[in-house]
Image 1 (cartoon, rainbow, N blue to C red):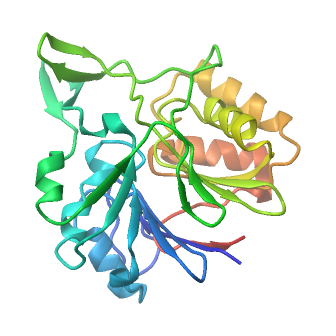
Image 2: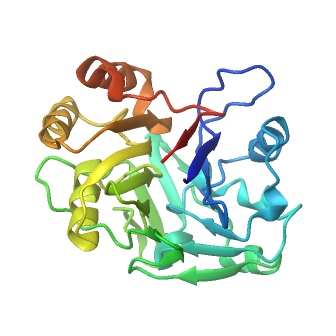
Length: 274
């Protein structure tokens, strides 16, 4: 049995837990504790104390991509836990900005590789799927194959030749293999949840039966939202849908209306077992 607990998310339904725009999920296999993303601040430290989670037992962290709301909490985690292994895509350290704030650019990246390595982080960077523990893997690079999903056009990154559009190639998800099939934890799913599911089913040769995490359907177009719902309905193996973070309240409610009791409102402190 694998226990999955959401440590950081946009909504905190219980007293004393702290919410923030971000995501962090703890995967406990009984032998290994893996942290997928870290939120953006020290909320992960606060929530771990409330949830009675021992963060010092964590050796491996996976960062889904290089945005502040997923990797920002890592520096706070390093205040209490050094010598961590951090798994990510090689492009995670891009200097990233968003154009969605009027005429100014807002920095939305994380600290430099050197900053973390000075604090004891050992980075394992690869664009191929990486085995983190028994039956737990990263997706590796997620190719864009559908004709209705796209990366947010407001994202740019800094290069020596100026700013270029950022298609977030480092976007990765966490894959848990079980006898039922595959369970997926999305970070933000910037490259589209249907793209990602198709990639996973192709690479791992198993059907996805459930997912939780950010879907980035909140800022997506109405066309992408409707097509995504239609594609999800085609998946007869899908039993668990746990939208959170960048899904937004409206799309979370819409998914519930469409999929009824398959939907889990995945917030801070939510725990599921698979």
